[in-house]
Image 1 (cartoon, rainbow, N blue to C red):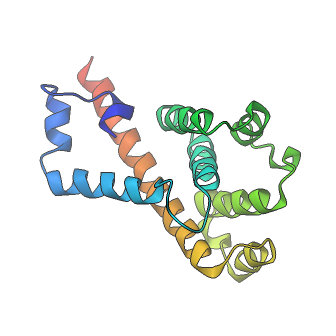
Image 2 (tube, rainbow, N blue to C red):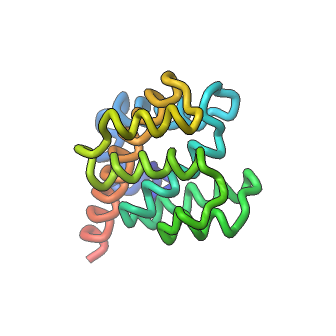
Image 3 (tube, rainbow, N blue to C red):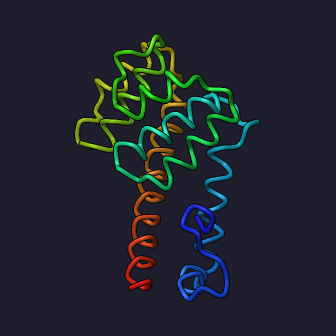
Length: 161
């Protein structure tokens, strides 16, 4: 989060963010778990694409740039990135990914629609139950991360005036 928001000591906002160090550490540990390349279940590529999509839908340019860079390092095709960043999921040629991203959209934009029917769609696309749980947790984490970044960037902008 410090890198994404450009916070470094001795910036007073850095001190504010780290006033409760255990919160900053817990957020980083959550990030590390969700984006661990050796984790089983959802592929790292899928998790990163969900992150980029959630950040794009939420108009979080700083986090979008972070996840886009990680996806470039994974060798993800530019056409896939463009489809996700422009919310053109119909142009993707990957049914499983389209369903995963559709679920992410529901939970980011209108969470009440993340119902049993959406879970069935995920299962029908070959997403195992433990991976559905991980996906929902990832999306919840991303929602939190997006809001923290937005708050810090807003505070940083106010401090610069």
